[in-house]
Image 1: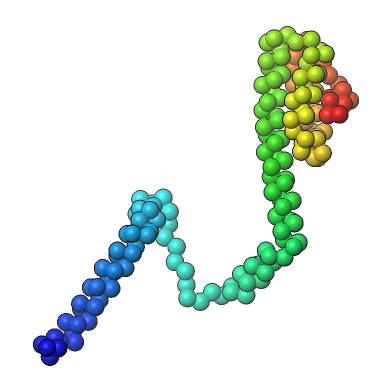
Image 2: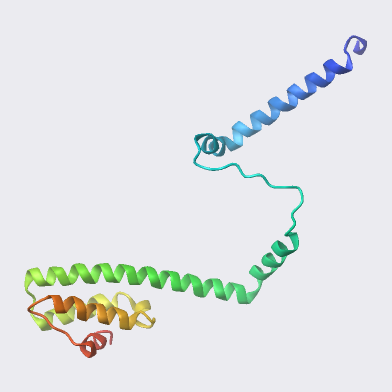
Amino acid sequence: MFTNISWSNYIVVVILLLASWYLFVGFRFYFDDLKEVISGKRKLQFRGFENPRYEDSQSELNYQESPEAISEQTSFGEFDTTFQDVDTLVARLKSFIADAAKKKLVQKEFTYYLQLLLREFPSVKNSPFNSSISELIVSECDKLESITLTQKEAEALWE
């Protein structure tokens, strides 16, 4: 029964079966990745068998698991959220001050609403960006004719 099959035919059939299996697995599980590579959205990345920086990557992995690294990552995450809060606060302050100029708010109402707005961002209050935000408030108020604030008054709004 097996005497009619030559080794070359056997090898060709095995190679065809393996190729069809890997094509099936590739299309089944990696279709989206293949589509991105073919469309040019992502470049194909090959990994070599030897990693000359194996020790470096292992030390980085060990470093990332240490408590110091976790606390550094946490502080960086806190800084990132604070920075996002500052961006949001700046945008809201500019739009609020522009609206206050259109509505012609009185100085007392204006400062009250500014205090409410600043209280929404407690992370910015205790950050180094506090004085910069106060300077922004003063500079934006200088553009208005009806409302003026000094640096001390702007810093007092945080309390």
